[in-house]
Length: 133
Image (cartoon, rainbow, N blue to C red; front, side):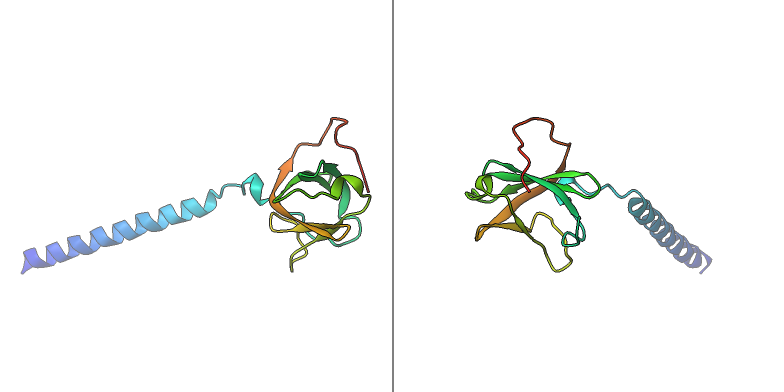
């Protein structure tokens, strides 16, 4: 009988120790959150006045966008945005949370151009990015 109680106690202690270790690992993994990848870039409150500081066409394949915090983003299109190189105005179509992200699009002269990717980039420095707004 004593042997049986000892075995049961040992089994319970082993289970408890395993749960404590698992809980500690779960806590450690939540503390060490990785920063979101650059392909999860977001501009919040995009429709508020001044949230988008500047934009630049990158031919008909992409658009560079600067937010009010002076961060730059590059949105590559799913298909060529043929009107973009020839316009001075762009409409930014946001989601229900008023964000611009990889699921957003722009409207240029009646053409809707969907983003394929949306990433944060370094500030453009070359003259090939001609400012238009």
